[in-house]
Image 1: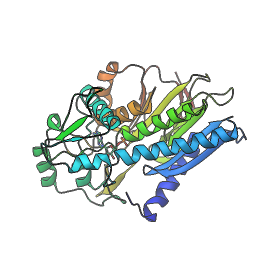
Image 2: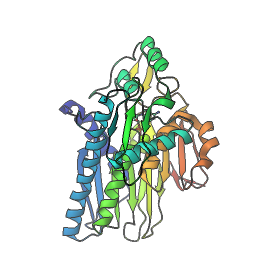
Image 3: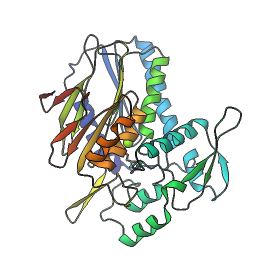
Image 4: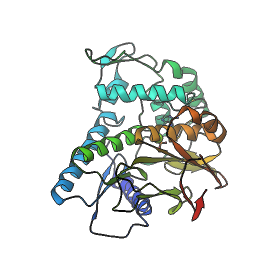
Amino acid sequence: MKRGILYWIPVVLISLGVIYLAFFSTPVENKKRTTTRLMMGTLVAITTWDVPDQIERDGVVAAFQEMDRIEKMMSRHLPNSPLSQINRADLGKSIPLPQELAEIIQLAIEIEKKTDGAFNQGLGKLVTLWGFSGDSPPNAPPFEEKILAWRKQFHASDAIQLSEQNSNQAAQITRINTAVALDLGGIAKGYAIDRSIAVLKAHGIHHALVNAGGDLRVIGRKGDQPWRVGIQHPRDPNRVIATSDWPAEDNNDLSMVTSGDYERFFLHQERRYHHILDPKSGYPAESGLLSVSVQAQNATLADALSTAFFVLGEERTQSILSRFKGIEILLVRQDLSHWMSPGFKGLWQGEKIP
Ligand code: AMP
Ligand code: MG
């Protein structure tokens, strides 16, 4: 998608703030190297620790190329992306798609089921209706009749049909509902982070942090120190509300992804309308939360679940948490109080989380 300079100026400023926060406690040392690029609508930073020059350069370039490849495959805004081709396909006509994209779509279907429909990759038309697809946010919500018309036509269960995948046959997909357009905005950034980590590892880089506008994954450690990651205060981009020190182990491999009502929003008649939509109502989720951070072994899952849990709210999230292994969460409520799952380790505004 072509973005104008007016779009990038705030993105860069906010992202620099977030990235600064993620490293705020890290002294500047020459073993640490950070390279940044603007991609996926945000500033992405790759930081490595104590890696020989040439390996570092090659690995980081390849990791950015990999993220670029994923964006080109999974963006709804690039007209020639495989995802856009699916969204343009005639109803009822099966079209082939890359295996990798089929796997993410399949994973999103499973996450939709496990989150009682809170995560839904078929909301592209609704996102466009709300105006969250463009360069700048809209200044008023869409007419209620338009949302009602979308809701009438949209049935989460008949969003798309993905053919059974096996090694002999290319995956096929069929669009069966005009109200559905695939939008992987809730999961693809996490997947791009995971792929970049896989490429860094393949280049022999084992101590690194990939940070895409505050969504991140780390491998290894920072010398004998753990990586410390910060969670942005939902109402003050210059503050961290919580930090988490991850174990200083060689095989450390953890992600943290946050979904919040402050990432993309507009104010209309003193109400905040944000980009995380409740598939049941067609409106921005009003679940009583300002943000949800999910810690998981990979960023793809953390990304999808943070979006879903934001829609579900505190009680429903707590009631389904046992369906997921190895994840921890931190929720920030409207009054800026918080709840975290028992294994979440870290500091809350300077106080140790028990
Ligand atoms: P995130 O920032 O990861 O929470 O994802 C939000 C983005 O995912 C939005 O900008 C939409 O593109 C898309 N999205 C919005 N609501 C949902 C939802 N309920 N399920 C899945 N994706 C969504
Ligand atoms: Mg997400």
